Amino acid sequence: MLPVMQREFVEKRGWLTDDEMVDVVAVVQSLPGMIAVNMAVLLGYRICGFSGAVVSAFASVVVPFVAIVFLATGRSLLADSPTLDHIFLGVRAGVSALILLSAVKLSKSVLKSPLAWLLGAASFIACVIFEIDMTLVIMAGLAVGLALLAANAFLRGVKQ
Image (cartoon, rainbow, N blue to C red; front, side):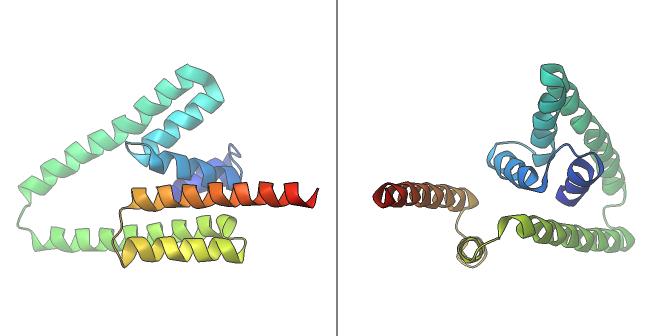
């Protein structure tokens, strides 16, 4: 979903800049619920207020709901089908590629300094290798960001 949303919201419609997209993704990933719905509510509210948020939430839920009901019905009818198993194998590979593409695109606008690269790599290692819960990694990133902000403010105060 993220590559599609980035292309639609940033490149095609201009509703967000690249930096705003990164910030919005960070916020909606930390909220409970589906990223697409959270993003829809946020952008709907930004563009048309409360009514935009309600319509966006409804619209972002109806189509996937119908598709899931249709696919689940078909999947249960073809439960032991080797053909369907191969189709889902291909779909999983495609989804993995889209997730990687999204990560690469978003990282270009986030990882602008050696420190950002270091923090990104440390977060990736923490999640993938050490299997640390992503919420803890996000909270640690928040703590590091606040500490850097405080250190920067302190250093500016010392220079004056």
